[in-house]
Image (cartoon, rainbow, N blue to C red):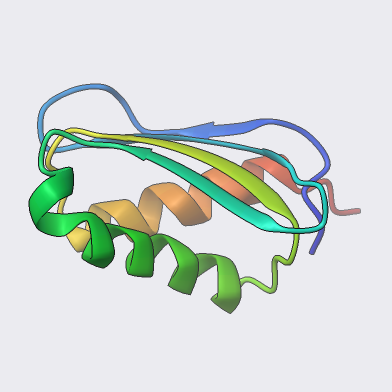
Length: 89
């Protein structure tokens, strides 16, 4: 799958994450903002990259603004943002 346009999912509410994806430049780039970054950075990044890998994405620019989302929420928001950004016929 290729990212063709901007895709958004989530909110800025507590216990949620807002994810914006854009077409990348041949790499996977993730910018994570989170008040719990110092505690959960590696876990959040692994969840985001796992979803990207599972969906077969090789070029993507991700902005993730986390507000304490659970792992299942992060996975759902990431998958939804990607699906919204992929133009399939």
